[in-house]
Image 1 (cartoon, rainbow, N blue to C red):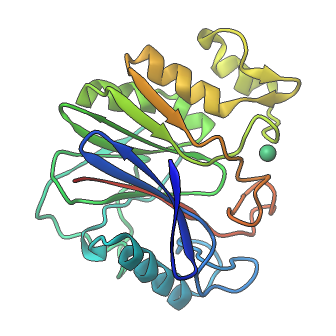
Image 2 (image 1 turned 135 degrees about the vertical axis):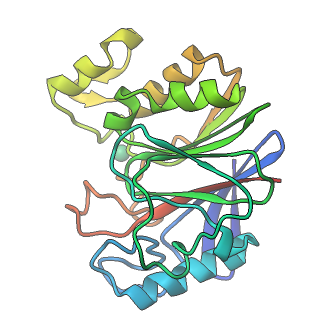
Length: 245
Ligand SMILES: [Zn+2]
């Protein structure tokens, strides 16, 4: 994974076999505090016009067609949308009717960008012979099996895990540790859960051969990332976005 810049925009770029993956940061946008500045979440209390301008900036910097971006209303579940080429997708640039509820996206169509919004949850992208998946992974979605489901559907071999809350900052209740007790020891650091490792173990169990982790904590890196927990819910959203080359 490497850092890329265009103007004031910064993002992390990763590559998967025959797919591109980017993880946006909060820099280079137009939103004011507490959403400064590249907030991509329209369901925050930010100005809608600023969010739409930010989305256009990101699409332009990444060279993706904003009118083709697939997204969903995320509900911390394990539902995965399959996207065909040629569908109309107004949600990214002209949000009106809410998109369907889902936390994962899957496609076999080249050049069709799929986007998840995050601010501590993990954005996870994976590829295999049957397609590409982009997932929004909070602990509930991980516990509900979203990674194994996506991996099985595309025969995933390679994955990247983007920036998200780290084991340094993710204090959770006992019920959350219990939800992952089948994954074996080493996930706990005092009262904190290592969500990066949870995702990695689930990917490995699903048979993936190569998994790259950004290893960047959104809570710790305030300069680059929004963090729902650090900012007590009053914050913006960054994105994970992936497409087949
Ligand atoms: Zn941290």
